[in-house]
Length: 284
Image 1 (cartoon, rainbow, N blue to C red):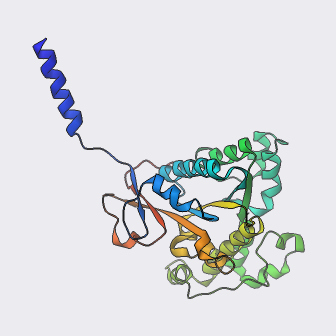
Image 2 (cartoon, rainbow, N blue to C red; image 1 turned 180 degrees about the vertical axis):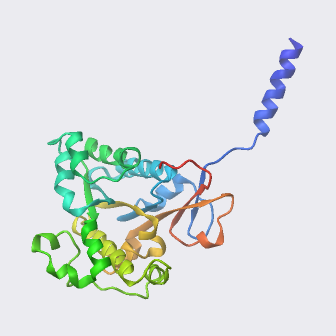
Image 3 (cartoon, helix red, strand yellow; image 1 turned 180 degrees about the horizontal axis):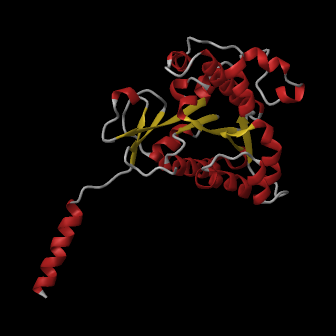
C-alpha cells in the first residue's frame, strides 16, 4: 500500500510539473497574446472578417470552422461565407449543392475544387448547407487571371459580357504598383508586373463579390490565403475604398519554431496573428 501511495505521489508530481505543449497561440496586432474568447468579443461588431490562412495548415482550417460556428451563434442567418478557393463562374453549382438540388458527387466532379477540399474546406461548406447560409465563390476564374499574367489587362476586353460578369468591373479597376504586396511581387525573382496585376485582379474581384453579396445587416466571413489580406492590403485594399476600416477585421497565419513570443517580422500583419508551431503536421 505504501509503495502504491508513493507511486501515486510521483505520478501526480510528474504531471503537475510537466510543461504544457501548445500547437499555436494568438497574438493581437501589437504582438500581445490574446485568447480566442477575447478575439470573439472584439470582432462581434465587425461586418467584414478576413481569415488569412496557410492553405496546408491544419490549425488554420480548424480555427476557420470554429470561427464560423461561433459567428453563426452570434449572427445566425446574417452570416455570409465566402472563399478564394471557389471561382465566381461556379457560383450556380455551389448554390445548387447548398440547396440540395445536386448530389455531392456531381458537386465535386464539376466544381474545380482544390485538392485539399475534403480535408480543409468541405467542413465550412457543409456547415453552410446545414444552416442554410449563403456561401459566395468570390475568386476570378483562373483562366482569366492567367490571361492577365500572360497577355496583360487589356486582354480581358476581348471577353464576352457574360465572361466579364465573373470579374470585377474593368472600368473601375485600378492597379497601384506602390501597394507593398504588389511592389514585392514585381520585384520577386520569378515575379514581374504581369504576376502582380493578375494578383491585383484576383483581389479586386474578391472585393467586388464580397461587396455585391453584403448589406448593412450582414456579417461576411471570407477565407483566403494570408497574402491576400495581410497588412490590410490585397482584397482589403480594394474593399476599404468603399467600406469604413472600422467595419473590417483580419486574421493571418504564421509559423515559428518558438511560439512563446511573436517574432518582429510578424507583428502588425493583421488584427489577429495565429502563430503555429513550425513542426505542426500539414494537411498536404
